[in-house]
Image 1 (cartoon, rainbow, N blue to C red):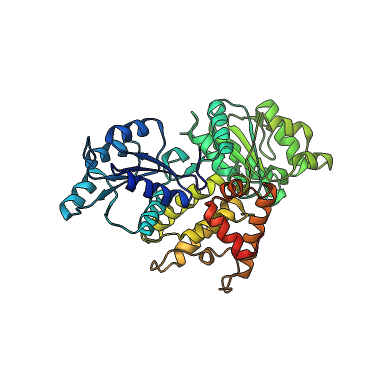
Image 2 (cartoon, rainbow, N blue to C red):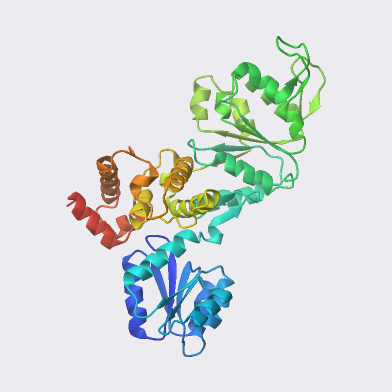
Length: 436
C-alpha cells in the first residue's frame, strides 16, 4: 500500500505507546509508517521494503540502535536516533556511523514531522534517479517513466531510430541524452539540433554541411552535424518544424544511410543513431500535408510518449528534491528548505510548463531566498510575485481540489491520495474553501 505523499517511514522503538503515537502522528501527515519493536524486526523490514527515512530508538531489547545505523545506511536510508539520554558523545558517535540526526525524548511531534519532511524531501530516493552523464539525472518515480526507461534499456544499443513525443518541457532532450549515454555510443559525440530555432534556409547546411560557393554567403567549406556526429547520436529536436524540402533529403539519408553536403555530389556515410522529438501532433501535420508520412514511419522505429507532469504527479516531489539540491549547491545556500504549505501547493499545481517550469521555479526560489525561513508558495513565482495575498493561487488550488473530488465522486480518501496530501489536510482545505 502506498502513502498519499509517496514516502515510507520506519519507526523502531520497544515502547508500544511510543510506536503507536509516532505511527499516528506521521500517518496523519500522509506517511506510510512501518513499526518495529526490535532489531530483528528492523532487519526483516529493511530486507523487503523501501524505506525513505527511519527513526530508531537508541536502546532496543536485542541490539543497540547505533548498530542498526550502518545496516540501514547500506540501503541509503537516512536514520535518526531516538534517545532519552542525549549526550555530545552519543550524537558524535551516531553521526560517525552514518546517522543524520538525533531527537531526544520527550519531543514535540511537530519537530518529528518536520524532520521526516526534511529527510524525505532532501534525500531523493536513489531508486527514483537514473544517472545520465555524471552531472544530470532522470527522475523515474512514476510507473510511466519506469516503463519508458525499461524500453530504453532494451533498444539503447541498436541502430533503430527513436521518436520522442510529448508536450514542451517534459524532458525529451534529457531522455535523448540518457539513451546516448547508456548506449555503446556513449564515448562518441551527441549532437543536438533544434529544428525550430534555426532558419529553414540554414538548417540544411547545419545538418549536412556545404561546399564553398554552393550559395551566397558560403565562403568556406562547412562540415555538417551529421558528419561530425560520426558513430555517435544525432538528436533532431522539434522535428515537426522541419520544412518539407529538408524532410525529403532527411528521408533519403535515412533510407540510403548516406548524404551529400549542399553543393557536393560526394556521398558521406551516415553512421550516427537518429533520435527525433516533437511536441506537435505529427498525424495532424501529415493530414495537413506539412509532414511526410513515410518520414514519420521511418523516424518512429520506436515511439515513446512522455506524459505531462500533471499526469505523473509521483515525480513532482523527487524532481523538487533533485532541483532543490542542485540549486542549493550552485548558489551556496545549503539551508534553504521548502515549507509543507509550498509542497502541497506544488503537488496540486497543474504545471503547464511541465518539468522545465518546475526547474525554473525552484531555481528562482532558491536564488532569491534569504535562507531565514522555509520557502512558501509565493516564493516559486508561479503567480504574480507582487500579489502577496495570492487570491489567484488559492483559486487554482480550489479548482484542482474540486476537479479531483468530482473525478473520485467525492471519495475523500482517493482524492487525498491523488492530490498528494493527508485526509486531514484535505478536510481542512475543503473547509477553508467552503467545499461541501
